[in-house]
Image (cartoon, rainbow, N blue to C red; front, top):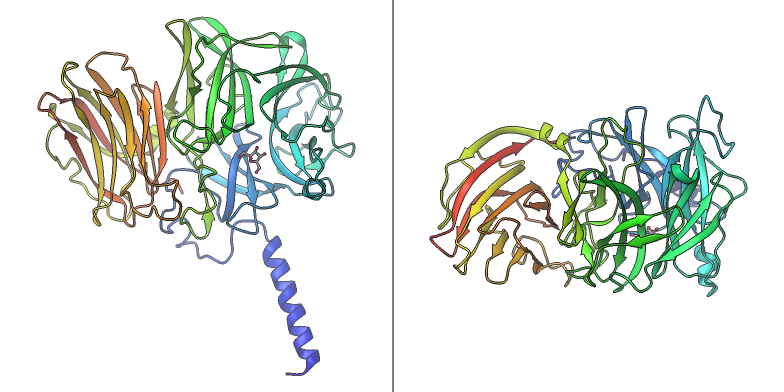
Length: 525
Ligand code: FRU
């Protein structure tokens, strides 16, 4: 081959490569039949069509569509320069992928943030007839970070006038420059009606900073919270602030993700409950132990949808189903990561403090296929609960109420097993009073020393002698809701073949299954 030909063909390859790198999803290299059928691909959870995803961003409900933007690296299955990927759902079960919403620019890559509907056009970026959707996000400037400066994260905005389909960055970015804080990111903005101003809840290294603005452009610091409160095993990230009703009274909930420092290692999300007066957040939960939205290893950076209509009135949450300890190593090939099921957050009084329950959004019931009711009886021994096998897609929901004698020391629960004898166990120990998930032998675990293990959560049952396990099993995850979401454990697992067998087990005769139902779940793609 002549030198000229080599040059031409290599520039052709370079051009092709560039084209491939900039092609927005969906990935064209895969046939329609193969799409979402890859090994480990979640079948009823949101995952990107291809490539890397982390945190949910910009979650708003607008004109019948729940928007989900997400941290996205379109050129690789590992974390890298961040974009905002985009998808919508109209029913919280089926998803539609949309083109990338926000691309990196000269100010940096696009880290996590939120979106608002600027109904009164306070920003002047739209009109009152067509209020702009405004995204508020962190610009991360890696070249500045590389110089050793601390000022490399600052807050910027972008707006859309066509239901989030196309976006323009605000020319005056950043709207909130860095005041000299290394980790200064993940703005969650909402309208504070009583004070008629926007409130930005921002993670600033080891605390939350609250800013306010009349127009989403000029921001004033109001206060700080948390330097001496809550868990501090790692950096604070991805906050959310919203009111929730408890017995007719309104309380404010502050979610704060931390990494590392979670209850079972690595990433996790803690919460505080109290008052917010437009300036200060005052935590009213007594005690020094952190409260966790989820005790499993795989629910991080979760936040809630804004603008769900008042007639609905729910506070719906979605988390990133992974953990920074091994998120870049999980054994999936064409894509990496999925989101949790959408969950409703409910607030309850709990002694002197407050408890958040997370329950699967009621829409997930639409996933149900055929179901069977289980006869009450002893939970001891191995009982094959699922006569209707579906080898390709063993996807199911289990809802079991166990009864036990509180004076017995017992361990009981469920064992999910694959044809290859891979096992995932979820149980309760009445002596240690711990709920646990054991994924030591759940399939592929050797990609990270942090992955295999038994993960536990102390749990005080709400009704002595009874515990309810409500669980959703996808091809690579378990979401366990205990006693109507008083405790939740979300755990990834990578069995070579799906878990076809479900068994009950118990160390004591006295443990009984009081009621039980199992539903086969449908694929949502
Ligand atoms: C949390 C996080 C955020 C940041 C984003 C970067 O998982 O570290 O703090 O904005 O991921 O992708």
